[in-house]
Image (tube, rainbow, N blue to C red; front, side):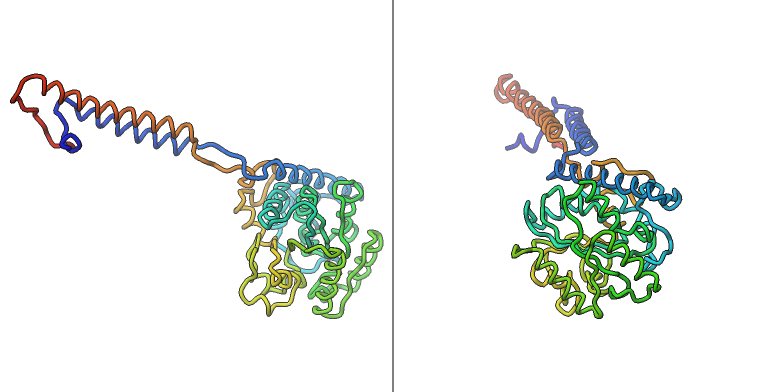
Length: 381
């Protein structure tokens, strides 16, 4: 046991220092030479983002064909997915940075991961509430749904906040129709609502109703018109149930902050941005589509606070050029290089083994040198 605590003078401190330096160097290498690894569902995430990128291009092409210009100051990625400051179809003020941040095809991978984590599988029914305020995010949701081959039941909003899909001749339902007619997605909205305060066009100019009615007619969509929030919610829930055709609804996706969908400001705050697997506390007292689904233990994907979601998944806020598909923490994680760690550990163990063997060998030589001769020992440091 002495040999554990005492060292022969013949073994120098230099050997100990060398082993220590090797250990520190190995730690530095392992910490600083980590490797990127693909996250789960990588191929599906990549496919969804590629589809979103194609959809972005299709919408931009359609916009330019309609003679609607793109302002590079408000739309630095030149996506065609940023609207205008004011129009008859504009419901309220909007944060331009949030709209710009949403213009990232890799958000499709984020939505796909959330659907996977919610347990959604091929052929499942997913209810969706789309806001015209975030057309780029709507596209990413559609791309994720199409990639997973689920059965979405979609109710969209015709109007939008500032910088959203608020051009009178190119509302969200027009953009959606471009995707459908281009065979990029195999589904479209079942119905659309007029939007505005409590989804009743309150606060919108008289011209807004005419603009929305014309858009619904040219896109062959049923326009939801209810004289109260309660009736609007009831009508929407019936639409979701009817189109689910007896199949269980496995998740609800809300895009933006629509009152009917979230349950006003209180409901919007109750749900965290992203995936909500459990109902928030006190949600039973809030009127809204998402609260009703959540009470039934149906997972809710709440796509708000876009800048925060982007930072969480390693996406730029906002991008100054169109992001490359496949970039971001949603695709790759950083892990320790296992082979490097094993190699460093092997070198350290070899050094320690050599040190121990040299100590034992020295003692054996002293023992053979003559009876009664003592080995000079000194405390080990």
